[in-house]
Length: 78
Image 1 (cartoon, rainbow, N blue to C red):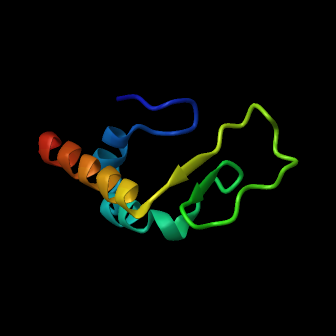
Image 2: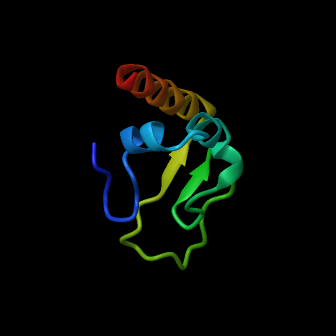
C-alpha cells in the first residue's frame, strides 16, 4: 500500500488524486515508462536496452483490469 521508491501505490493515488480515474483510464496515452513498457502490437524495444531490464507487455484487457482494481480500492477507501 505504500508504493516503491518514486512510484506511489494505487491506494495513495486513488486517495490523494482527484483525477486518478482519468490517469488510469488514459494510461495507454500517457506512456509512463517507454524504456521498458510497451503495449501489445507495438514494435519490440531497441536491442541495445540493458539485459537486466525486464520488458513489460500490456494488453487492453490488462489496462481494464488495472482500472477495475483501482476502482475497487477507491470504493474500499470511501
